[in-house]
Amino acid sequence: MGDLTQQLLDAVGIMFLGMGLVYLFLSLLILGIHLVAKWCAKDVALDRNAKEQQKIQQSALAASAAPLDPKVVAAITLAVRQYRSQIE
Image 1: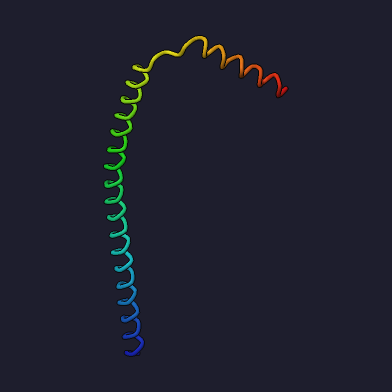
Image 2: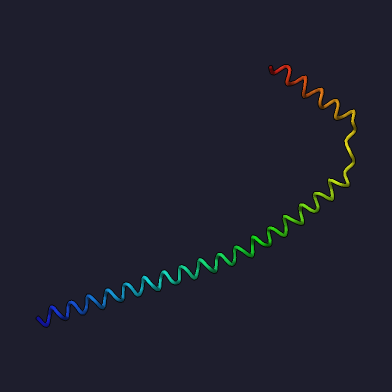
């Protein structure tokens, strides 16, 4: 009877050890996920700032670009119409 009791106590000890290790692993995993999420959020914020600056530069370049010549626009329009009529 004493041997069975000792085996059950050993089994309960091993069970608590295993559950404790699983709890420790999951806690570390959650902590790691939170750290990576904070790190990625900083990168996303930096990317957003870079994209906003790039949009501002592109809009400035577009505003400074010379308008298209109406003759060139008419020639392109005519070429597209002619091409589409050949396809149909």
